[in-house]
Image 1 (tube, each protein chain N blue to C red):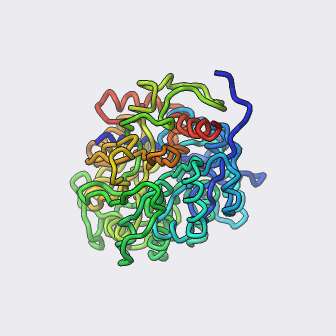
Image 2: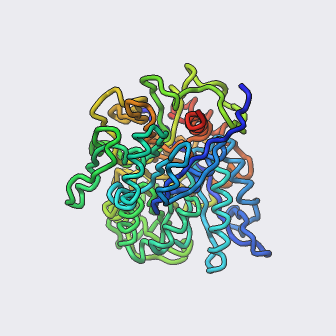
Image 3: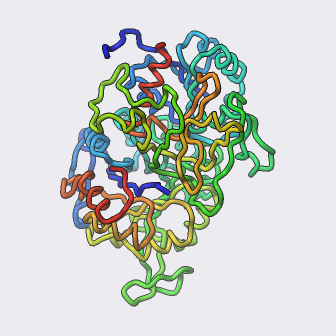
Length: 233
Length: 271
């Protein structure tokens, strides 16, 4: 496939937490023009929005408060919105994470109905490390084909089954998304229990990965390239 | 469960004569030897299948810290695997700056011993998964410990030390590991002053004692001389990750070769 000339313009939401540099660098490597922004007015002009995440849910939502309306508006308008790790959890309705401080469930963006729950206590928490993706259904994010802006050689060859199914990704989290509707689950991962490691809304434009694609080597870069493709469409 | 054991190369970074960041490696307790450029080494390990990368800032000065954050940023631009940065982190602001520079996790050692509240503050603000508590343990064969292990027929406890093992704290490593976990540490990074630089294998009694006491992931460090040493620390001590420096830096074993051997021995690794 010929390389497309129009790179997608992607806004990475800067809500004051998290490792924005890695996400930015990964997206750039995947062929995106990246704008770090805390200005909701800039979201509308972008081809896609990334909600990054390292951190705690309640503090994340507090900091993302000023962007809530703009994010929901863009998601409803069909703009691709990609949540990573905590950013993915923020796409759901609520999280148990705030319970530990007696604050009740913290409210998310409610773009994918469901709740974030903590791993059972007999497992080592956080779930930290490289674990396998078990793709449950089609979504452009998990395709394994070459895409826009590929700079890196495919050392690992084509992905199995034409998607990222069976590949390893890097996880660091203590909570996981439990969408109300199983159809929202694009991929699962086994950590004692099968949990949703990639989710998407019904329309397909709002999606997220529990793992960090920007930290998942070549598999992660492939997912970022798929995202850039989705944005460029 | 398909969570793999992680193989982690580590670089110790100091300033060279020109004030630039450079990697140094201790060889058999002798002086530190210049080993290479941090950014080049990071690139190499990123491409060679490392599961994570650890960057330890061993400078002590304020100017050193500025240069280091700059170098961390350059390293972060080259690695698409998790990056842990440690050295001199004492405040919430230090944690934030280090994460901002591109680290995914921070490793905190004496800063947390001096003020344990830092662990909880960091975990609350940035998530416990990015708070790694690092200990420099030293065997003590006296009566002052709380948790004793058997080492070659002798009973010893492990003391948290600071300043590269030169100063004791009286704190029992196992006790501290439990406290660090309770305060919100997401991972424990266990170094052994006794095993450091020996290449005779990890300190198995130490690593076992910590792994048995906590449910937080444990990174074993110090003493690795071969893939077999990693096998031992995974299988006998229960470590979640094995860290090594010189065997990788001096190309005694490649990451790929190490993982291949571990795979053959039945250890789940990401190939």
